[in-house]
Amino acid sequence: MYSPKFTINSNVLKYIGRIEAAKEMIESAPLVPAYEAKFRQEAVIRTVHHGTHIEGNDLDTGEVAAVLEGEQIVGRDRDIQEVLNYREVLHFIDRRKKGDLSEKDLLKIHLLTVEKVLSKDKSGNFRTTQVVIKNSKTGEVSFTPPRSYEVKGLVADFLKWLNSSGGRDMHPVLRAGIAHYALAYIHPFVDGNGRTARAFATLVMFSEGYDIKKFFSLEEFYDRNAGRYYATLQSVSNQKAELAAKDLTGWLEYFCEGLAEELERVKERVKKLSLDSRLKGRTGQIALSERQMKLVEYMETYGSVSNSQWRNLLRDFSDDTILRDLKDLQKKGLIKKKGSTKGAVYILK
Image (spheres, rainbow, N blue to C red):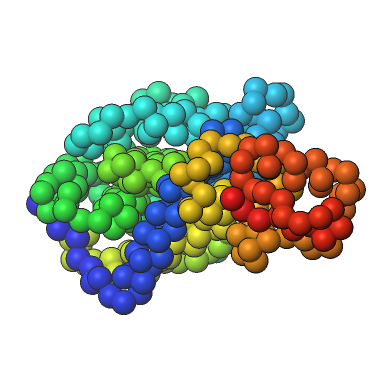
């Protein structure tokens, strides 16, 4: 049975710590349902765009969003189909129930990924021919995956480990990172291997309940520096060893760093749209405008806000607009007014 080789070093521990801290904050933030839906939709758009762009898809984020909304755009048929396909992959991951992950799941992800892009005999089926990975600029072969007759056995061996007690005892992020590399190395299909490996890694995390409200997109981290992504994979593949003997430490450092960075970006956005945890029990699901959130955050930080302070904080808005916001916050029972009109200050209840 496959058994991954790696070291949990200080960098891996540091990134896992950052991941857990960001995860806790995101999951406990009292966002209203409308904001949660917005975050999830944005994550889908980012995942679909960057997950296909890194493979050469020319559509930009706006065009991807339009395609997902059912709008007609001018673009290559293949690019549009890849976007629609990757959305279906994400739907499959969302709907897939917890339990052992199987060859059937892997083949289904691939089938959805290459629907109407690859021929039917190559879609959702392991490759039966040898493939090589070439440098797009030089044409030089940079990686030769295992031979086709080894694919099915290597996948079965990997899945056996993934579903074993030892595999299940591992942190979900490490399991996902190992799955990503193993499938990228085995390269089970003629085409669509990168998207399939990344999607399967996401499925590994989601199946462990590690979806973090579906607010994040690791694909964006990879695509922002695609050269580093491929170089990190390549550095492990260059080790002259079979899959089980390859040291995955460098890859796992990179994988954990990516998730930590992405979740911290999400965390900062969530913080801007949520109330401090000590207000959570009292506010429940109260919808606040961005202006009101700025006012509440200011009061949380400094204890109160005066007339001159809120004018400076929201200088692009009229006094009447801000006073209406403050009155609304009072009605909602979040703040109270102290003092006379000119010297009034507002504090949290």
